[in-house]
Image (cartoon, rainbow, N blue to C red; front, side):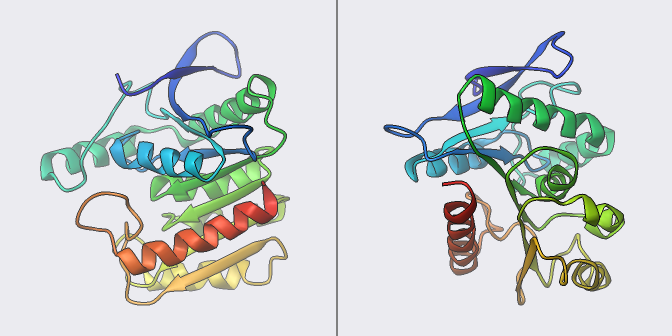
Length: 232
């Protein structure tokens, strides 16, 4: 069992699991950590723990709960990677955004968090963009979000700050997609994009062979400054 709290759905008819990490003392604010396609695995839980060490209440909701509760997969194991791709293909992203809104409500109403941000990776990076456009989140960060070019028509709904980290050699996000993101978002007053030359998808993962230490630290420092400005 890796999940240690439960969140009521928006309908209030059931609950779904989440991992929560608490800071020492009063939290500066709350951050939702949005999973990759590998579930709330050790790397995502470590992201929460690091945010808690920085003074935030951090929560990672189990967004695959309708498909398979408590998924935790290793991207460096081929069979588990393939399982993750299968789950992503079946995942209802609109339902996932409703679950993220439920998590926002939980943090505000149950945990008493005045401000709530989110940070997502891979699939979570895409969902972070969708969260910025479709929910009441206060600030959002996406790392190597996939398919955002297909969501640019929602840009006018982004009412709060959004930061996107874009590795230029992302095997899942083509150069054409990156160019479309810049064309569609560079002039948006609430959106900031950072490119990471020569870096691939997953460069900021906590565990495994995809991580690039220098680039991960640079991106995370920018994320920390962003949250310090907009959340706490």
